[in-house]
Image (cartoon, rainbow, N blue to C red):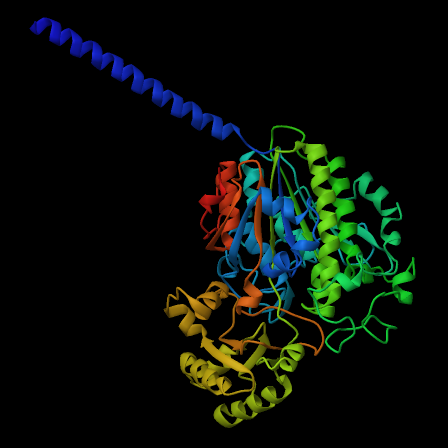
Length: 555
């Protein structure tokens, strides 16, 4: 009996071990399968100046194959925010693709005062390279001011540079920065009197034949036409009146009303930049993106490629007409149709279910303050001249010279540290004294010093957002925040750049292979995008990434 018990126990142990081993092998196989399930193409879409509420306000006007396809079949992060300031195009695109904030990646604005060079610099400019596709200097660009890698870089590194990265935007910075340091190509639109897609010698010595052919095709000229609403304007109930004082004018117009059909719009050979300020700039971008998809054979093999796209016309239209305009509404309805065209091309050329896509924005925008004021909402415009005059008097009276202030850019004051040292003053004391003085000025809500950014760890609110935008080597000595609803801008059109919620709340949609349909109202942040894509692809995070993967998005 004892022998029978021992044999039975031994056999049972063997069977349990074999079953457990089989289960583990099954798990390993499943893990292996997960690692093998990679999209043939990742598509990143940034819509310039898209507030989250554009998605909901205009939803009933969208077709089923554009934004609605992403919302209803993909994953919608409804509470997505930029977690830094300034909220502008250069930092926005960089943060999306690096998974980092300006405090890490170094792109602290579109333009900023460079303390080492003692001059203003542009985020993508690089005169060590030459233009390709134009004789102008519009192609002298590179990503050299971005100090970390992008998700596009990490994908190329992971596949030993065998995959392709192509980045496209009307704006140079909207193409250069997402493409990272290793892009095969970045293309942007040079308007002026040329109307061509161009690039930089950073990427290549001459344009591919397909780009030359596209530039010669007359596509750009075809969009030099009158702009009228795509639907009956009477149905545009989600926006304000067409004729009002809150909107800008094209040259030659006497009122900001449809149809827009100025001489500059209709001229087929001059002033191609005007296309950018119409929804036709997004249509032209879509045409070029689809051509790139086909000609570059993106997503045609098992090595994952990356297509980075930025739709810039939404920003130009928003700046000119404002958040509440019928022009903005028409632009998004037309963009929805362009997205549907792009998705159809992806289905055809890559295969439905064979690609992964995300869509977000580089920043939001404020309602036109003059409109808000008329609706009895606190808002207005900063009087920069009066503030500058008052500050100049304070500096002369307190320190004997106004030269102590070296520059003012991106709502930051840069002090001359050498003069402060020569005057035998304490830098921290000077920062604090000027900050306290500035706090009492017109339209100023709050002020922080570099010393505060250095010596505190903020975890929420405005100071948290400012600190994420504060780069120790590049940012200024005093950081200024305007009151909510106040801007430094013209009395017409909308702008952005602040840490306020209307500038930080943007859409974030995921769709395609590896994405679980659904939605969340939990907070997500822009630097979370790149780590999420990295986890899906099974590759390294970008080198400066401080975001967190959004796990509920992934299958």
